[in-house]
Length: 325
Ligand SMILES: [Fe+2]
Ligand SMILES: [Fe+2]
Image (cartoon, rainbow, N blue to C red; front, side):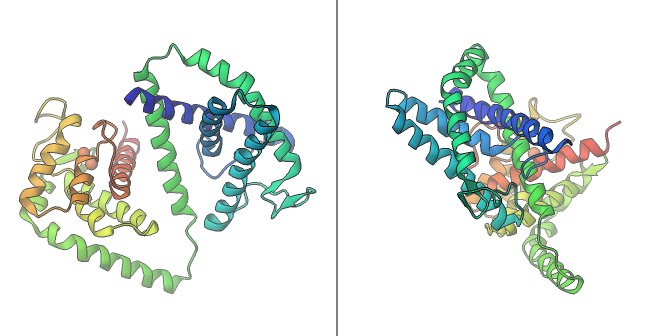
């Protein structure tokens, strides 16, 4: 089961990156300058990764069907994906990733007949050339390697996605920005203040965590960023802030003391300590317990847990990159 999941994550990352290479070459050659396609900043296009997974599943089901069924299936999958992505990018981020308005037989500039035919041809190339080559080349790779590559790739894409969302937030005028920031800060403090007053939580200021930062600074930063993302996605912000503030509630300098394999164990220690501080909801307990995923193997159960897990990774990487050397 685990190796199956690793296979999926690996394939998704691999084809996202391959799609990026293809699309970058095509657009850069056409425009005679470097063009980074897609919404995200990194070298991947999740549209290609997701489409490849669905196409691979479709191939396994319809490989013995006649060509007309295949054409129909490939049309629905590829053009459907293109329409959905184009519409979402326009609707949620107010950007156009491509524009077919100047083409014949097009729909709102998101899809057009010419490119739908290209996608169908590409889907056949995927079935008869790319997929067999990919399976042949990767069958010898160990599940562990696939797992690391896949999980790191997906987490990078997720962090990239949140960063982009943050940048694309609609610009407000100064006054409404100030008012909105004040309201947000007040809501955050209403949730956080009772925990921050707790002596156990306040005691985290005595422990160094990442370079030049105390553990209290770290949990506050993770809580603030998770809260921001939680609001964007209309999640349970109370659980997010409380879980994030308690996610690293352990009392030792992990670089010099504490249990062996700290990275694999401290989430449990934090959870036990957190239960002494306050009564935890199931969601809050899951946030603390899964914040080191994928090291904890069992994935987060709630989107709130995933948000804190990603915010924790983002803040930790940022601390090390900023203070390296
Ligand atoms: Fe942690
Ligand atoms: Fe942390």
